Length: 114
Image (cartoon, rainbow, N blue to C red; front, side, top):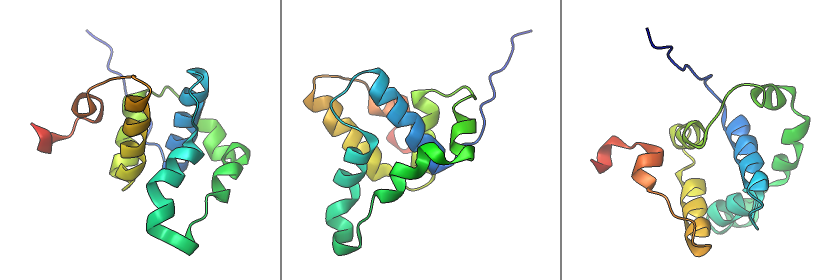
């Protein structure tokens, strides 16, 4: 019998930190903080703040999630489920600008696109 893969349900904080880990591992010239700024700075105007992202590495819950299995798919699903499609769109724009391609519908798995 095949073993099923069950992933932990992640929080937005955990998914953003995991995404930042991937971006650093791939040595990309942008970070989660850059993506977050592109996604929300204009919309939030003077109410924009991304300082909380600097504290993610000190959060024990976030660190615990790094020991669980995660993939780009679980990160994107978590961000989409929690209303952060803007961050995913910023990620897609940045990767496209660098010539890194992947199919958004496949990665995100959105039913509405079928």
